[in-house]
Amino acid sequence: MAYKNLKDVLSFSPEKMKKNNLFETPRLLCDVYCFEPGQAQKVHSHDGQDKVYLVLEGIGSFTVGKEEKELSRETVVLAEG
Image (cartoon, rainbow, N blue to C red; front, side, top):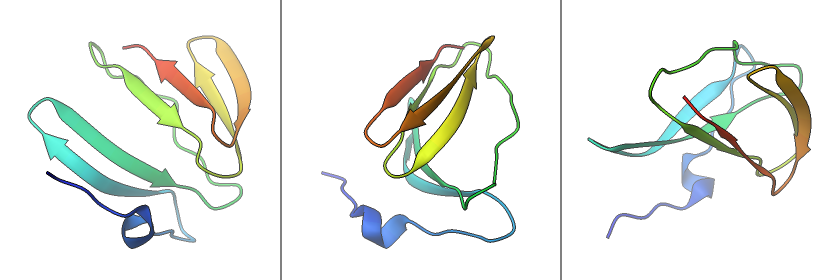
């Protein structure tokens, strides 16, 4: 069984958003993205791939398709590819 404690994986960077890998298999990528206030990820898409974003702490602005929404702690959003 593969498991990790988030406290051991999370790291932040003052320069840009930090992507921290949790698990990777041929069928799954599971990362934790850590943002400092004011940091952003470019709007992009992955054809044929879905992404799930779970807000662990704070508030983030998410754009999926033409819809933009501010999400807070313990909220999940699905971005279909």
